[in-house]
Length: 117
Picture 1: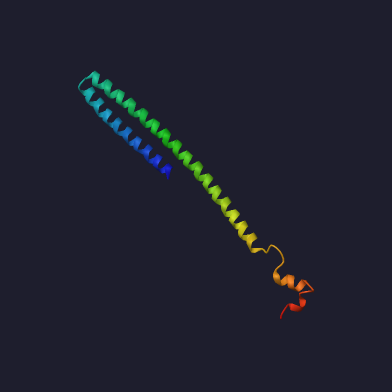
Picture 2: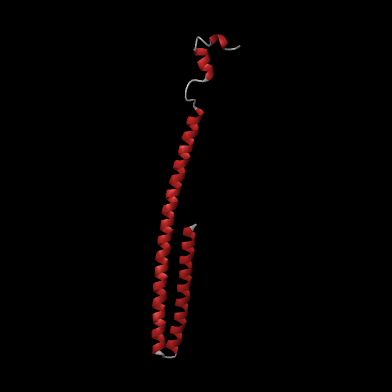
């Protein structure tokens, strides 16, 4: 569940970066039309920042997903091991540990007289 939260957080970071890039692109377009070099420089810095933020969020999301997949693989393997151990235990529980009481009574000549009475 923790991984889902981290995935969601990185997706939100990507959304924020996209909004920053869109705003910067709009400002850059407006600055170019107005021949405002200072505003164009600010918009370019915003674009660079948005791209950096987007790239970082994408890297983090890839890392989170890779870790999640690795842990899910380990979990599936562990669940398989538990199933095997449970199956082995149930198979050994069904087998008697030694001779049954009936076998003991019929194999012991001293008790033969008491069997069936």
